[in-house]
Image (cartoon, rainbow, N blue to C red; front, side):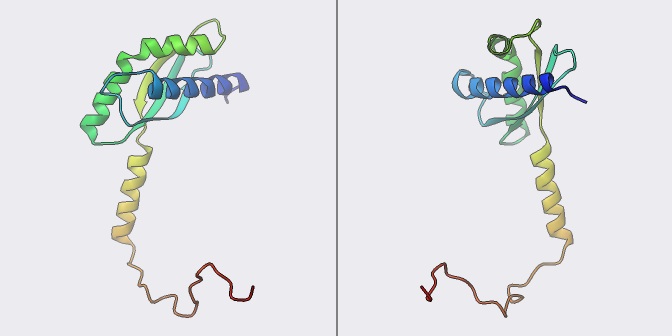
Length: 133
């Protein structure tokens, strides 16, 4: 169970890191990166930043290396934002959630029978304008 303080720190880290990625980091490898969520350890010394990167595996690995190279800068930004005894050490991990969701959708499309467009014959389509007004 996470304490409220740890959850607030995770949210603050998420905000700081995502804004710094957008505005401050000039590394050409770090493009199309979204911070999905942050996990902070109970003693607040470690923070795992989960990121989603649009693109193929090569682009994802390049973006991850670029983020790891700029982790020190991002830690200093986090340290100035949150007031704790220790600044959390930032580690980046790829969030595979979207990739897994797309794979499940593709598998379901293959397995489930295709719907026909003539199933809704009884209901008229609405055009958005009422003729009764």
